[in-house]
Structures are given as structure tokens and as C-alpha cells.
Length: 303
Image (tube, rainbow, N blue to C red):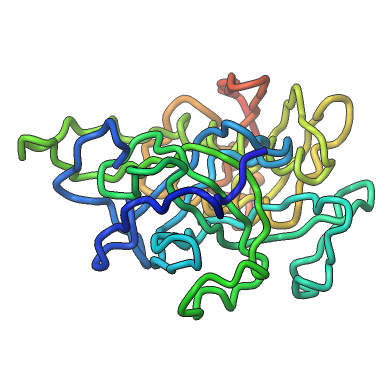
């Protein structure tokens, strides 16, 4: 497994005015997509990582700040959009993490919840910068959130995690390298949002079980407030029970349905005999296998 390098020649530091992020092969973009804290980035694949991290891809977040280390000046703190969970290695001292970060999977095995990662370019001569694509990075879990306030990296507050590839995240209104407006990505549809929700559900069930889910079929009832109101289905022969955090993630995804045309996926219930709470609800039936998501058209669905 890859590690945060303590013996390589330091890569050139990123500009002090930026938290980071273009790969050595990608041109810098004119406008870096920004979040609340800093540039938006995403880890979409790994070169070397424990299996439970693979199940939680993509890892989206924001570059919060640069933190120098004793071995190099350009570590970057990546605040995650949603927390991730990992199995501590044998000998890991759970006393290093706060009580609310200690969780268990469905089999009662200990896991650790983290809200941030520490990343750095893997190879000498590369660095995080605007426009990066598939930049090879060393990745460590931040197991003590006080690291965000430290002047230098305290290596006792991190745990080596993986080697992966970091890219600048997508955002609307970007411009191309020649200054012309970039081609706009297609507007999301109801099907797109429901497919994203299905993948979040599958990954949440896998995280709860501590093992991958091969096939999942589920029916999601979405209320008029675009929040999850009901869930049923089957995941590899068992009920699709996700982690508690998954419900929050599902609701964030489903909130994107607001303002979208209803489309062909799902169907509103017949208003006759429905109370106010049910009126406006929709039901979606999804099937997930690998990277494939199929959404049944449910033309006669009743929530």
C-alpha cells in the first residue's frame, strides 16, 4: 500500500495563496471551481487502497489549506463532502480518535469515521494546482481534526491510507484554456439524480455490512419535500440497510430533484384518497449492478 512519503525529495510547494490543485498533464483552467472553503476536488480511483475505500468512491471535497511538514512544505488538507469509514489496522490504538469517530460495521467490527484527508503529490516535480487531472497523490486519514489548526503537520494525527488520483472537480461556468466558455455539461435530469441516489444507497449498504454489494434492487419513496420517506428492497439477498450517514447523503442527493421536470422515472400517486403528507410523493424502483443503474419507469406507481 502507498504511503505518505517521508524520504522523497520534497515536491515544489504550491503557491501560498492557493490551497492547491492541475495534473502534470493538464492545462490550468481559467476559473477554479470553488466551494465554501477552497477549490473543489475529487478522488475518483486508487492505485493502492484498502477495499473499504474502493466502496466509498468518489471522495469529493474541498482543499482547505496548505500545511507544511517536517519533510516537505506542501501537504494539503482535504475536507470531505461526506465522512468516510475505514477499518483500523491491527495494533491501531483507538484511543487516538474521539469517541464519536469510533463506529462499528454490521458485524460489530470497529471502524473509524473521518471527515478530512491529508494529501500530497506522490512524485517529485508535481504539485496540486488549478486544472489538475488524475494527479497521483499520497493519501492519509486525518484522525484528529485539530490538525486543521496546526502550524505544521503532526504525524501522530494522521494514519496512512492509500495512493490515489486527484482531479479538480467539475463546476458550471468554467472556461477553456483559450479563455472561451467551456462546453456546458447537460443539465441533470430526474433519472440522473435517482441514479446517483441508488449508488449512494448501494455504497452505504456495503459500508454497513463491511463487504461489497454485487446486486441491489430497491424502491425509494420520495416525499413532496424531496426527502426519503420510505425504503424497501434487496441487496444480495438481504434487506438494504445502510449506515445512518447514508440517509443524510440520500436526502442531500434527492434535494436536487427540486425544480427538475418530473421526467419518466417514478410517478406521482393518484391524488384520490391521499392525505396531505402523501400528496406530491413519488416512488422510484432502481436496480444496481456494478456501475450499471437501471430505473424502472413505474408509470402506474403509487407511493
